[in-house]
Image (tube, rainbow over all chains, first blue to last red; front, side):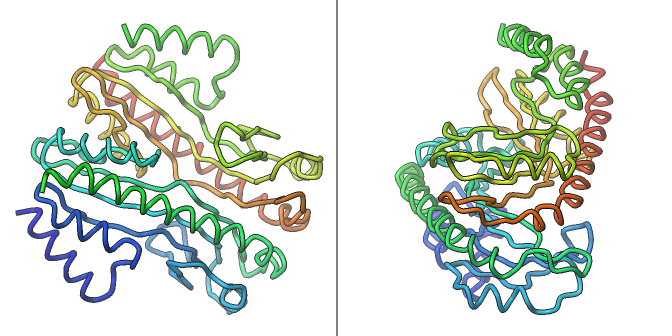
Length: 190
Length: 190
């Protein structure tokens, strides 16, 4: 029942283009695997995040890219006026996988470890309801503008962009490796 | 047996001053609780991290503070010569708790959620061996020097230091709240 509901939600998101391209093959595979479902996933991204307050609900995606970013794009985005604070962020991939038993959960975690993904664990461990999170580790996060004042200048953001792009590439390589291990491990469970 | 071994390791670390001051009360409490032990903990910190290569083993703490940092300290640290890349990092608290049963693991996770700590889960879920991770969310991370080139200048680092300090404070407040909820929930299990 739960799996069916998540499958429908996923297929709607997919048809609306809401699933990142790099994440699609893995999410489609998991959704097709008999014992598993995905409830949330992001392939990793570079973004300009506007923070209008303390809670996550007050965050706005000022710009967001699930791919390498060029100088022109980032400078353009960071120099536009925003109401709140503005942060540069590189977020790694994140994937939530649900299943029914401890055995299935551990099989997924084993595949994760084999892929070399070090960040992940079980969020919910209840009879019949297990939820796993897997995450990459590539990240960067710093303020560009705070309290209406521009702090990071063009030159600094330009100088770290190459590093951010190469870290995002590494993140996608790790995601591809995770997909490979998940296909090997969960394929038999189809 | 496992608990006993971890208790000894913890007490050695404590006597050598290796457990951060803000983390001590919570770790001492957990070590004293009958059904739980801690295997690793950090209260959160601001640091200058030197990266000499890709793996975590090649990282060196160039400077590390488990408290607010003043301008003079951070500027002094960032302008010293280092061999590798240099990153500014604000890391949230992290805590690993072990126990024997799913029931005990879920009790600890419930206390975590009550405290408002959103990042955490079960790392190991095996018969008789459960390991939980709990983490804060306050973080910042950016390169100061890459490939021998200074990228972030004094002015930028100075301008974001107040924000980093206030985020670290918020991190410690959250840690104190976690301690309160853990005492309430696990106290009975003593």
